[in-house]
Length: 502
Image (spheres, rainbow, N blue to C red):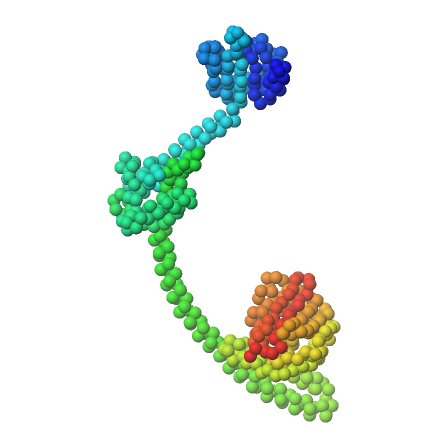
């Protein structure tokens, strides 16, 4: 048993465990002692254990005092600085126990040493932190920071509390914190409720009027926090109060300014709405005034062409053909302006009828054939030939024309696809080009009025086609969307109910 016990002691690594003879000379040395103090057994056995003490403790005869106490009382325990072989110091807990033989004769001491340096550092740091915190809190001047006992009586007071509330420490210590609240809050039990909430949840925050010593009120932000002891018992509460009176006044001034601004905005909005109505009416009148002479000009040119064809004047016929195309272009532009006006003034109406969807698609794409040929855009049609619908034939054809024209402007020289298929109770029409695509920042505005996202300076049109097309589709109760990415072409998807929601 003695051998096993000796082996056990010698193998312990986290504690220095060794024996001293009655005079304090080391007689045994375990692994923990070697690791903690740095001495090998041959170096220290036979030496006085006084070499583990600091010079000042040796001068104060502390090693001998420890031996005397342990010899007299049977045991000595203390904490203090000890010295390693390399001269470095560590904070140690030491227990020195008197050892006697079977007959009760004193034969030496057992010494157990633990390294508590890290714990000591933590304790010192905590003490320093507490001192710093006390100094910091006491010196804060812009916040009232103080302690309440569990019943709500003031237990500490900082300079900020003195400046904010007007009480000196001697005047306020021991008084209930309800003294800082208006009478209406005291009567209603607000202070009791705040402490109950902080006790239950650990924290309560509030804003409201508070009262200074001289009776004046200020708008305060208040935070009350429960403080527990290490065992979980309630020590009291910390209370932090900020004066937000200036912010409160600024908020009230801002609120008044906002109300005034909202009133002015409403007035300005009414003025703008009136101006917009006047503008739209002007566009409508101007468009009609322009369309009337153009219609007459077109009729005269058509009549002249028929006459000149019979006289075989090809050059003149060609010139007249060009004039006709120009008048058609002007007519289309004016019609777009009229459509914008109709949308804005609520006079945009649909004339629905039963129609063959495939026939509508064929007719529209045939009318675009020449433009697609000039643009070198081979067209692929994938149309469900069984579909019928009740739509405004002219308006839906206008949508398809606009989408095809848009592709001609933005993706010349690339293949073009038109796909038409049933989509539940709707008909889905896809117009897909394989051009440069549309940048993400432009996709958000591509359906806006007068928007010509990415168009070259030579591209025609007023940027109204997609705007009008979306309004036509929405007028039928459908949707028109864009799916695109730079370098991957553009896909416009129209979904129209088979029966227009007019």
